[in-house]
Length: 271
Image (cartoon, rainbow, N blue to C red):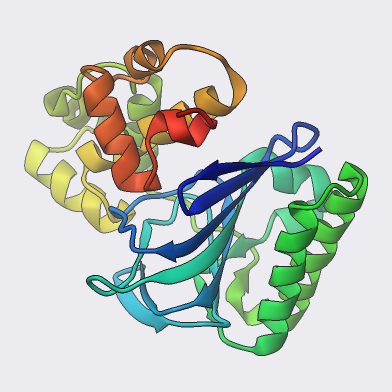
């Protein structure tokens, strides 16, 4: 059964039967975010107020009725103007979730970052968010999710590619190296050696390809790993900080809040 976790003016919905889905709702929010990524596909809805959606080196104003579709691992941020308030909902789908509910042909498609302003799209995704936050049967929620994504694909096929372009081999090696060593202190010389390129070329080229520096990308990786541990384990926050490579719990909490607008304890549903 879905249970909302209330964190100030933010609610999270998680259904234990559907662990790859998370819904976030914020009301009257002024929270700002560092550029960050999510490991899975995300859908966002603006319910009230104005914000700025930053993705792929572009910035778009978004207001009530806007829908944003965010591919996995795309660097983005959504922030209101200074002192302004807004209301929004986000649906996060971890990578394994799409494979479970969509057929192979649809799963293999790659979504481009997309901003939608058609009221019909907002209604469609809003109904999905409402359904996922309800107490209906998990199988019905999966059916609703599959129907919604298939309908979005039908309406906006031009925003889907048949296959995602393959990254350069050096970038694949670097990302795999950082992922395998995410709990260790960052050693850029070792990363450059793994890539087989100079340190200067590594930093410049990595940011051009990923939208983040290697250090920021590693922090993002650690935060997403910490989200998994917070949702799925009862480990103390100090242990999660240690396992994900942060110097201490304070550093972990500060970096987590910069990207999630809540502390780790409140994200878990405590405090």
